[in-house]
Amino acid sequence: MTLSPDIVDLLYHAKKTATNKSLAVPRAGKPPDFNQVAALVLNGVKLRHSIGVLCLTEEAMNTWLNWPPLLAPSLAAFDLLDLNEAPLTAWQNFLGQQPYALTILHSACAELAAGRVTVSYIMALVNALPAGLVVIA
Image 1 (cartoon, helix red, strand yellow):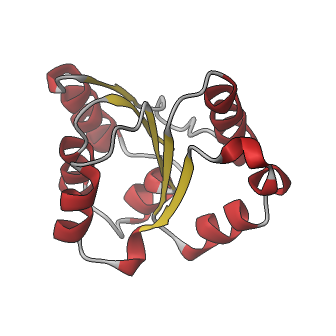
Image 2 (cartoon, rainbow, N blue to C red; image 1 turned 120 degrees about the vertical axis):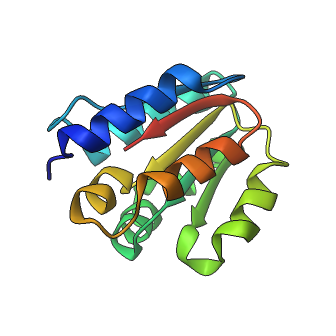
Image 3 (tube, rainbow, N blue to C red; image 1 turned 180 degrees about the horizontal axis):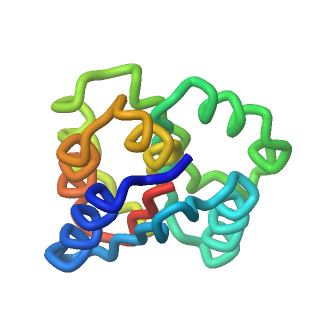
C-alpha cells in the first residue's frame, strides 16, 4: 500500500495549515502497521489521554475488536468508532464535541491509496476535531 506523491503532498499541506491540532502523516510508502498504532494507543492510555480510533474499514474495526488489551479496564478513555455507521456530517458533528488528545484514522492510508476515500473526506474529519494529535494510519 503506497500513497501517491500527490496525496502525500496534499496531506502535508493540510498538516501545515491545521490549527489547534497536530497532524501526523506517514512518509510516502511507510504507513504505520497495526502494532505501531496499538503501541501509540497504549502509550496514550498510560498518559491518561482521551483517545478515539476511527476505523474506515470493517477489517480495521475487527482487528481492534480482537485486540486483547481492548478488554482492559484501563482503556476507559479509548473510543473505538466505525465510520461506516453514519454519514460524514454526523461524524463531523460528533467529532466537534470530542476532546480527544489523540485521534487515529485507522485504514486511512489504505483507503486513500485504493481510491476509496478522498483527501477531502479525510480532511473533513480532521477539520471537525477541535484539537489534539490526529494520526493518519
